[in-house]
Length: 125
Image (tube, rainbow, N blue to C red):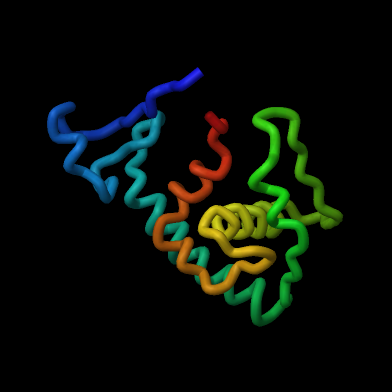
């Protein structure tokens, strides 16, 4: 089943196709995606430094993310903290979508983080 992408925008429907940068896009809750992407970009650089310089994160098996089924996938970690793992998973998902295997550097994926994660997790056609 092919579904059309729902776009929430401030622009009239005939101008939406010209907003290729997504500046006027909103999520279904009415929040501006530009502001979210800015915060993800800034916070992503801080966490990128933490994962590469301080903690020296080691990633294995990121090529398996491409072939995941659409439903029934569970990610587990062996830590008590929740937020660090979610941020690490987000870095890994975005890096994998941009074609980096078992690494999160260089973090060019932070320039378009939401689109990379959405493209990786969308159903295959």
